[in-house]
Image (tube, rainbow, N blue to C red):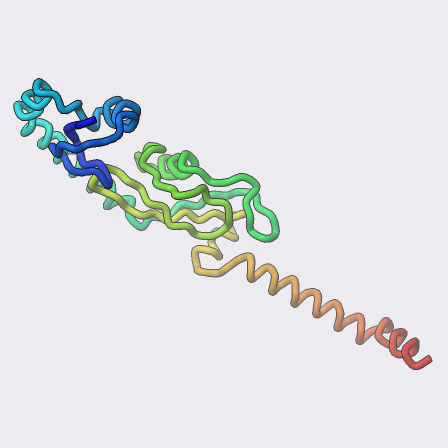
Length: 194
């Protein structure tokens, strides 16, 4: 199906482009979301008559998105979640969770603006892309931790899972050393001699 794009669509074209797309993509995505018009003679005339109005509206929306993007770009958001000892979350962080965190901090982001290739399933600081307008995208940091203290440590660049394992090893080594220094070591030494 041939359509006229009413805004820039990633990997497809820009405003005013006449493109061929699959019928389902046009009927289910482009047309219902007012991102395109069917390329009929009447629609082409209507588009050309309203082109400057559509371009002005798009420019205004892009400028507003850039202003919002300047405030959001590089910002960090902490999300407290439950996780196992290996750092895997019980559940995952979705685009809706990210949008809720940004909105709770005073931003204005819809869930559809959050671009996640796959849900976040591990502890750590993750970079997430926000597409505020078809021509404006910014990156934020989402710090997923089990506690505010852990989030603070992760923000400083510490890998809390590795640190936890190293602390556990040090505690175990200290416990073994104290056992060997105390009476338990002598018992084992006596038993080995008999």
